[in-house]
Amino acid sequence: MRKSSRLILALDETDREKALDIADAVSGTVDAIKINWPLVLSAGPEMITELSRRSDVICDFKVADIPNTVHLIVDGALGRGASAVIVHSFTGSDSMKEAVDTAAGRGNIYAVTEMSHPGGKEFTAPNAEALALVGVRCGVKGFIAPATRPDRIAAIRKVIGDREILSPGVGAQGGSASAAISAGADYVIVGRAIYKSDDPSKVAGDIADEIRTVL
Ligand code: O7M
Image (cartoon, protein in one colour):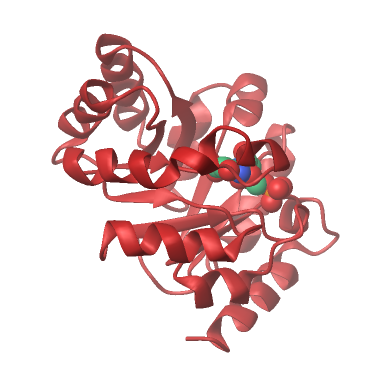
């Protein structure tokens, strides 16, 4: 994934044509497009391939399963053109290692440490540093840490060295792109603020400009 605007679009739009229009409008600005179950369930897994012609595609399937199932999901996503897959780390080192081994030479694995919504404080936040350490040992490319709590991005950064941090929670969830980058995130992930706006290209450009002010 290139590291230019440091902005990743979370394309949770469920209308296939709208999703492709938005991808076309912002693919020159964003460094990657992240897709999740909403778009895959409405438009089919072929959207992975379709979008991979426009941008790097990160499959945010938050895989949380036994190693064999993890292998099948990661293999299927990368086989359709994804360049990265996101997994949960609470499943433990054997599942996470299986994801990393399956992706080796074909793509990257990112692991969730602490989630950005208020409920993320209940179980994920108290265990986030330990979860991140398991990810480091398993060789993941990077981690997901919350833009809604920039101090937690900084805390995760201390544990993971120079591995990447991708940070969701900007805009609709109240977080700020510049604050997340300043706290140590490499990229911010932005969904509704871009794909629900009247002018996704302009909003993406504005967020990229905001990020540039703190680099
Ligand atoms: O900007 P939004 O709130 O519309 O979208 C945020 C996206 O990031 C959406 O796709 C979420 O599923 C995802 N996300 C979070 O919002 N919080 C998290 O803690 C983790 C993720 C995520 O991307 O996990 C990999």
